[in-house]
Every structure is written in C-alpha cells, then in structure tokens.
Length: 127
Image (cartoon, rainbow, N blue to C red; front, side, top):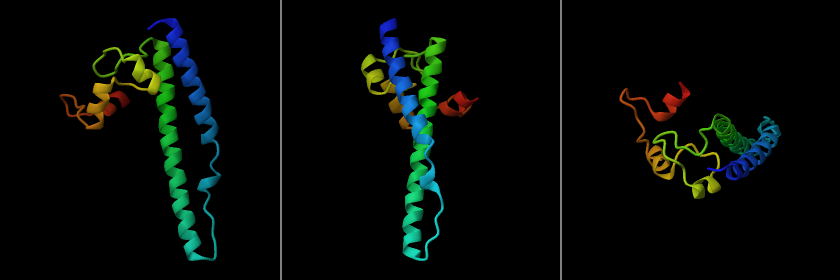
C-alpha cells in the first residue's frame, strides 16, 4: 500500500472518528423521565433502550476506528489480523476500520476463530 492510499484511509478514519466522538457526547436521550401515564413511561423506556444500544454500537465502532488508526501508526494497517494477508483495497474502501480480510471476517461472523486453547480471536486480541 502506497503513501497516497494510506493518507486517503487516514483521512477517512479521522473524519469518522470526529463524527463518532461528537455523537457520543450527546447522552440526553438516555435520561430517565417520569410521566404520570404508564404507557408514556413504557414508550420512553423503549426509546431509552434504543438510544443506549445506539451509543453502544457507536462506541464499539469508535473503538474499531481508533484501533485502525493505531495499526496505521505501527505499520500493520491493511494486513488481516488473522491470516496476515493483505486486505483488498475494495474492502478497505467500504470498511476502512476493518481488522480482517473478507474471508476471515466471514469466519469470525460464524464464530470459527478459535485457538488451540479454545479461546476466541477477540479474547486473544484483548489479552
């Protein structure tokens, strides 16, 4: 991967990081509100649950974006963290924060990544 491509992906990742960071600061949707009507409270609880799930999803995505920027800094960006093959530019264009090539991502989605000790790939990476 040449420097021009790296700069393009870095700009994409930094833009996404700024967008996600700004969105995560808004937490007023998760405030607990009391109303005299029980049906309104149920509706507000449902909306609050949806807001919490969205915050969780966005914080996970932000973690992945920051991880991609860290891999870029250490020179391992664009290399699959499982098979160590180069990730295709088409995949990086679609998902610049990806850790895996498409084949390994499909295996991870099917929960096929396990080591000899029985730990999953995410557990190994966390360690």
